[in-house]
Amino acid sequence: MDTRVKRGADVASDHHLVTASVKLKLKRNENKKQATRVKYRVHLLKEQTKAKEFQLTLTNKYQVLQNLLDTG
View 1: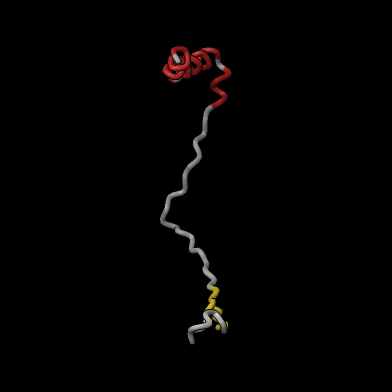
View 2: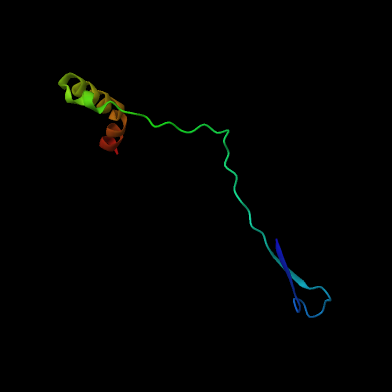
């Protein structure tokens, strides 16, 4: 820790300005679990049946948003 006293901080007082610089080191928290990456099986989309099923799932999932856009 580095501290220094500088005179003249306040003219009407006998107190001096003290400045300090502190160096901190961050500690790695080992207790948290690392977030695992999700692996998608993209190679299955080459099959026509799986691709159609995926496309149908996506359209059903976002149908509510499409309805909101159509009505608004």
